[in-house]
Structure formats: structure tokens, C-alpha cells
Image (cartoon, rainbow, N blue to C red; front, side, top):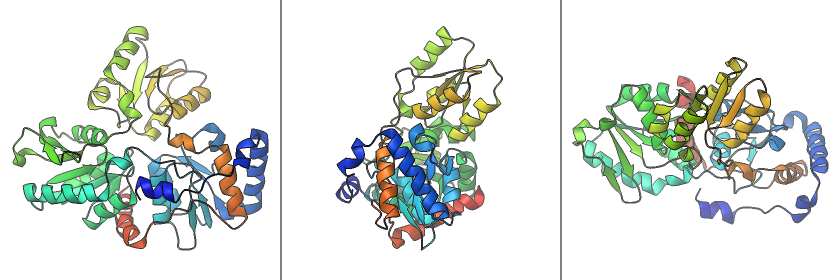
Length: 366
């Protein structure tokens, strides 16, 4: 679904919900959850605000929520995350289930960096260059249309938790891979598996060309020129400042960060990896974390026995993740409880079928 389509189908929240107090909304949400019982399921991504996460029936990263969404029986799934996550839930859900996104403006800038027309065009060009030697993989931070393309061409989805495993699988299928849409996760994962930087090239969808100085036969990984607008804001300068001002501090970052940042950090891994690392860390240890600010603040509040800061002191939370708030959640649940339901996410079956192939290949392997 394009940005234009998202906004044209967006049902705006009635103004009355914007004037409710937090206590009124909290009480109302609790009542609806109690009344609906097992008919309602609310998954919440780690990057959501605490005001929303308090109502999540499950919380997790993309892999965990993808797995949980394929197993729940509730007829109404209210996804507290972003658009591509709700699409994934709809793709994996049962026919009698409905998936809702409380605010359709909750998108993902990374997912919007690759649309189906761009990918079809790139695929034709790359097939011309490399022949039938490429398997496509897409990060789950992508639209249903991109997942569908990947599924149709024998590929699979990946998450930051299982990217290494999925890239290893891909290389068993074909000599080369196209990694969509986050170049940084693709590059950092491939390097871990021994692929050299000079064996990678970047496809620029805007200028419609492959960025490389190497001969085609040397290229093993083709990276889509996309990125996470949050994780790109962590820099080598941030690391140098931490090393200078806090020499005993551990630096841990998400693999959506740039290659040089990941290389200079002490640890790098998925959201789950970061959370687990902090839970297992010794009391009194010090940590600078390079990931989304809502999660960093939550970890600070959960681990008073450790010193935790953001790697970038000027970092803001993910703006689109923050679209889901108490007023939108209250309104969404109110509509569902009345049998209406606003902002339902529906992926066309012809797209969902191939996207499901890509997702299920990942879930089987992971």
C-alpha cells in the first residue's frame, strides 16, 4: 500500500477522544479488554510508548510478533506498532480474524524506501547483469508488496534476530542475494559471514543503477539503498565521545546502524539481543545503547542497578512508532467493541499468498 493510499483510507480520530484525561482512557481501555476477553489481542512492539505498552498482551521484536500473530485465536488483533507489522499480522492471520492499526499514519520510512515498481525494475536490470543467480531476501520492515515479490521469486523474509541464519540459507539456494530494503543490516550480516565489502554492491533505486567499481562476477551481495532513519543517526563521533567521557562504558548497537558504527561498538545485535544483554549484565556495569529511544528509556527504568544512556544524547523516539498513543488506542478499541472497527488492515489475497510464502519460509527456518 502506498503512502497516498494509507492517507486516503485513514479514518481520523474524533476530537472528543483528544479531550479525555489519561485516567479516563486507561479506565476505558481496561473495561473494554475485560469485556472482550479472549476476542481481543493487542501485540506491542518494543519501540512503543509505555502508555501503550501497559496494555499489550504480548510484547516483542518483529520475529516474536510475527510468530505470535500466526498463532492467536482472537477475532480482533489491534496492532501497536507500524503499518508493515499490521500487514504481516493480517497475512498470517486466520480468515475470521481482523487486524486493526489505531493510527494509519504509523508507517516506516525504511519500508517506504522500496516500492514494488522500483523492485521489479531493479530485478529486471540485475537479471540482465547476473542472470538467474540471485535470491531476494527482505527485512520484515518492508511492505506486503515487497514480501510478495520476494516470496514469488523463492526468497524469504528476515529479521534482525535471524538475519545471519537466513543469509546462510540464501547462499545455499543461489550464488548471490539481493537484500531489501535496509543496506546496513544486509552489509553487517554479510560481513559476519565472511563476505568482503568489495564483494558487495548497492542498488540505487532513485538513479536506477548499481553502485560498484567491481566486475559483476565478483559481486555476491546486492544491497538496496535504504536505511532506518533512527539508527542512521548513531555515528562514529557518538562512539568517540563515549570512549572519551565514559571509558568504562560498554557500547551496544542495533545492526541497522552503519557498518563503521557496528564495527566500533563493543556489541551489536537485534532488539532482543540488546534487551537480553542488559538483563544478563552485571550490576554496576555501564552501557551506551544505540537504538530507539523509547526502548532505551524503558531499559533505564528497568535496570536501576546499571548506568544506561543513549549512544546519541540528542536521539528522539521513532516518530511513526509514536503515532500510536492513548487517544488512538482508546478510539480503536471503542470502535471494535461497538462492532464497527476503524483502520482495518486488509492485504489483498493475491499479494498475501506470495508474502505468506516468504514469511513461512523464515518461520520454518527460524
